[in-house]
Length: 89
Image 1 (tube, helix red, strand yellow):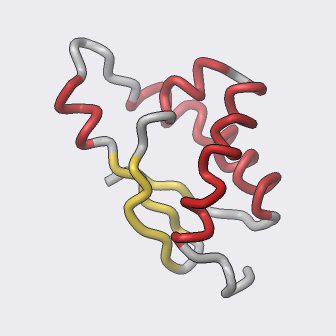
Image 2 (image 1 turned 120 degrees about the vertical axis):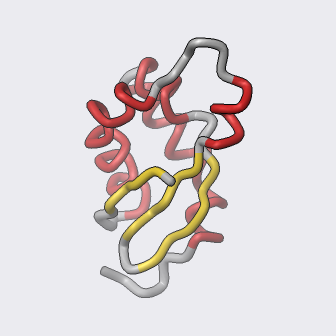
């Protein structure tokens, strides 16, 4: 893994990654579009959904995110040319 990838670089291209996810599967995009990028360390990207959970009215996408995390990781690789482990806070 390249040490040049930083959280700031991921944030700068996050919308590009989400656009790719949306083209591949809109349901997965819905599950991830409101994630906050919390941290990126040692190839591990931590996503925070606490803000969206506060406003949720019966729409908990945590199970969907778990089932479809591989699609997000695949899109991440396509955009950044690096593998990543995605975890939720």
